[in-house]
Amino acid sequence: MLLPGTAVTLTSAGATQATFVALVIVAVAAVILVVPSFALLFTLQGRRILGGDEGTPPAAGPRRDAGPPPAAHAGPPSSNHRPGSETRDVALGLVAIAAITRRRKPR
Image (cartoon, rainbow, N blue to C red; front, side):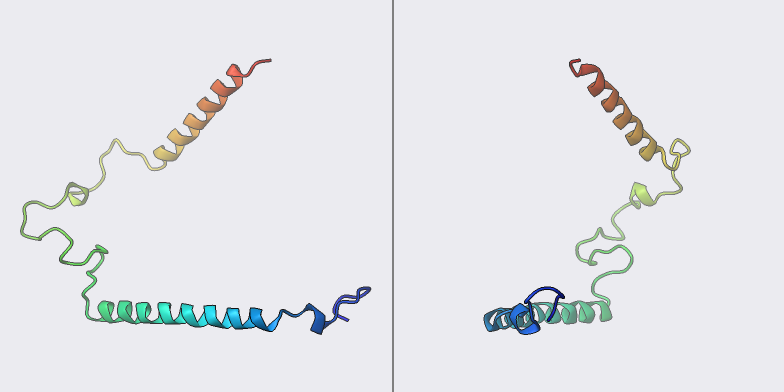
C-alpha cells in the first residue's frame, strides 16, 4: 500500500503510458529549443560580439566618437538625491491614499 488505511497501491497511483510519452516528448522538445540557444549565446560571448558591460551589441549602441558621453555617466549623482528617497516617497504616497480612502468611506 502506498498510503496507510487506503487501497492505493504504487501501481494504481502511477500515471498512464500516454502521460509518460507526453512528458518525454515535451522534455525532448525543450532540449531541442534550449541547447542550440545556449550554444549560440556561448559562442557569441566567446567571440566578444555581445559587447561588454553595457549589455548591448556594439552595432546597436551609440558610436564612441559621436559627441560627449551621455549625462548618466558624466559624474557622481547630484547632491539633491538622497539614497532611499524614492522608497520614502512611495510609502508616503501609499499612506496618503489610504487616509483619503478611509475618509471617503460611508459610515
